[in-house]
Length: 176
Image (cartoon, rainbow, N blue to C red; front, side):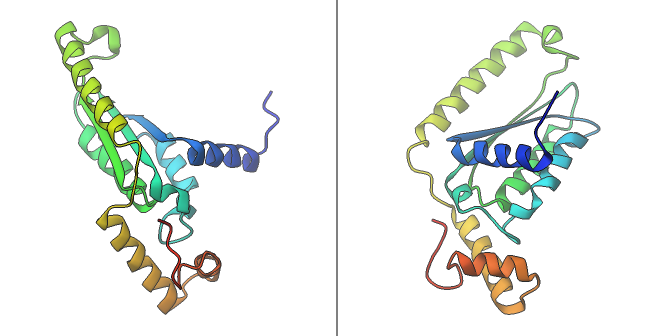
């Protein structure tokens, strides 16, 4: 029986995400979008979006998002996940979405499996090559400054403003 509280589980997940050199998120496609469980996960960690209380460690992370579908829909599922990761401050986001045309791995054609493996190997090499120095992209920095301006000027949420202030982000400190 699980003896952890919801808060303890959440803390364990955050700790794992912050320690990981590469975060991997997978989501099979259901009716052209991410499944409800993934949407609930993203909503649960919505507080760490840049508009609220982003984790400075996320600005130095890489993420791989994998999505498969029996037929179609991987593009929209990947877009949802990539948007969330961008607003977490992650600028090195890799996606791998494939329509496998099979109900499970055993029903995927052998040629298709071989093609997928080649693409996976190439993507893996690309990710390994960038693992040394991960810095925020111009897009991420622009989003950060837009959110900084919003918090500094409008003070919408006192908890978020206090968070940004405590990290010195209204002054000279930056998460990178």
